[in-house]
Length: 470
Image 1 (cartoon, rainbow, N blue to C red):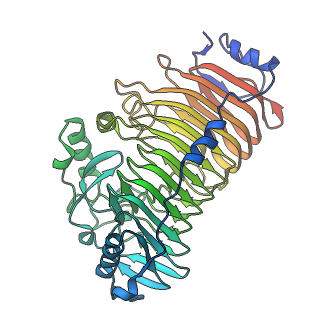
Image 2: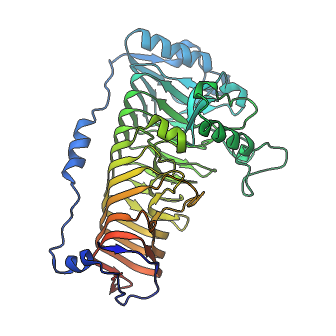
């Protein structure tokens, strides 16, 4: 068995013994080539067909909306969506101006289209986001505040155009509910008590319809959350100042996210988090976020295992990622598993970018994570380039060892990293088949750590201009 079973701290670039890693030795004489089935990425992308809509417009000003940043346009937008849906589809048009609104609930065959110069600005009074809806928060289902834009069980929906969605979250609205040292403020309640209670309810098997965590529990809502929907397009829009995660399709199929700009530097401001979804294309997007730019998820702990729906067939390409906890991330709410992720031709760079490619799980989250591939990506400045961590958050405190296998990073160029590798499997459940091919880390303060890997391939990898061997 080719298995790295002891901790190896990579302080130098000299060859270190790899406990009989024949796979590494074989790779030195083999022709460098990817084992990743990249033809599947093209097939997946080809299968994802964005919805189309009749050439029929319903402009919200015709329903009484005023773009004066003071009129409540909630009812006008609701009526325009209802009329569009009843007419069997079209565009609900937001013209230039700033339109104030509460939560927006999309219906089938509706394209919410924001023209250039249009802003949908959302109220920040939490009571505006009641009554409760069936939603998912940090991987757990419950009844809670409505997402700012929400759809449940709908088909053929879109949010398009050159306009802006503004959640107006900041240091005095929504964000203090995070409650930690960085974001908590005197006079603001925290999510912590409710969060602990919700997670306990999920572990106890209380049905999600009976988990009521709306008013008084301080869960910041996601910005855009289509739930159990099919055929979704989110294109060209800009989203700013989100209370929580920005784009979070859950249990959806056939999702296209294209040309979107996502800017929010608040707590948990993940850019795009497909969760328990199938067939997702994310391309030509710009991320500048306070948490992970892209985080692929599938539910937390007992709730994720109850639903038991992996996220699968994800293509991420031609995206730009600036600040964030991670660029392309898998986890941490990953108990339902993930498979077939292809990330290519993406660029990442920021002194505030903490990690480039990251997998995060533990023995509480578990999950089968397999067939995860990255190629032709560049990283400018990053703190940790490659992170695969089985000790995330709760650490090794459960009975659900994760399975991580068939992971390949090919043709990655990183200009400046504080640390290259932070790769840590379990001795009893090692990472299986991990490959780094044609990767160059031009400057790094520390090569880092690799431990507990079965079948590790290091092929034509250099750090600080010198060949690297684990």
